[in-house]
Length: 200
Image (tube, rainbow, N blue to C red; front, side, top):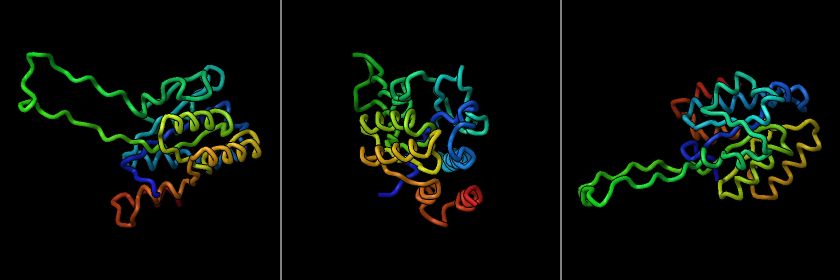
């Protein structure tokens, strides 16, 4: 099974200015997270951010925050507990009208937005906020793809333990380049050269 840009959303978890200096391989991790955000924008994949206790840890780094449609401030470690699921899968709108509305055969059909149930997720710390958010998304029946080279923790061991647990729970483990080339699918994609420039 390959990723499909038309069915994907991107979630970038807690790349915060006061947290990143303590993160293992933070420079590489942050660079890949920014690449993911840029690819999402290029390929029209909705991107969302989260920030854990921003009054203490600061906002997400500006270059990443600017790539997200919205950023969720949270105190719970799982962003799903704070409403992320409603952003990713908005509740259906109630049907408008009343008993005096036009008969059904004269009503215009309501436009339905295609659900994007594939969540590409990356973040820090991998064994805390990323892990708990991803597990809750799996519980809510999203397909979860964890971008390993854009995730980390303060220690390598905690990061790797998170990956082991996520794989065991049913998440797909991928890299930034896997996401890019699966979203593109072909060197003939109109955005191929621009995406390739982001990866090089």
